[in-house]
Length: 311
Image (cartoon, one colour):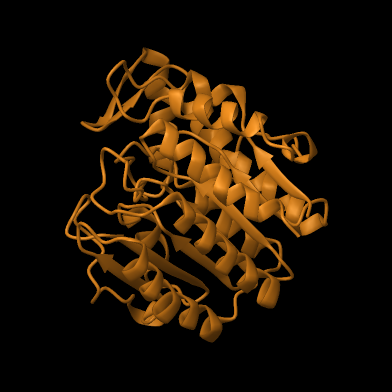
């Protein structure tokens, strides 16, 4: 199956400091793993352009975007205590968001069936007016609005990062055209993601939080995934599926407290790929979010991508 990826050199130039967990070493580990696969040379690599200010502003306040653009000109700093930036961070964040747009175009045109944006900085914590939690621009939310602008009105976002995707939830909390689903450790950073947060206004019941206690492993996680997430997908009938693919719910991850195996990511990928085939003519696009044990991250990304490329 034709699968497209984005993995741009600029992502290595977003510098976070020697001891920060969200480091370019993550992408090096992923690259080295993928280059050894039999399918790597067959992956489609669309030309990626930076997302425009207007495209980013479909989710973020233009004032925030322009302020961040000016901040990096003065050198490195922090958007919040967890979120350092360097001189190249605005460019990297713009191309991370642009990667999603380019991959959406590749999928919609039929050049590829599905795709994976292997990006940094990640995106799902970024809110309308500020970055946080290692994230600058909300890559997946920007892609969702772009998908809709191309004539696919119903977008499903599944976020399986160990941390709740607060920024993505906020972007679509009152929206019945984007169904946001998050499976995450709770209580945990960033503090949001309560099971009772179901959306509001037109968006009521188009926001599903599936909180997991620390220590949850494959069996209970998969049971909740099948009984809650898949059933909601069947009800919603999406036109396009997007995944916030963080791999920090892995048992070996140093930041998270869940106990998932690498195989679990393969299973979830298969289940969502089947739903994409059933409802979306296969249209499925994933975005790298978290994952901080380098071997677990690389192995899990490869497990996910191997499902995307399989027939």
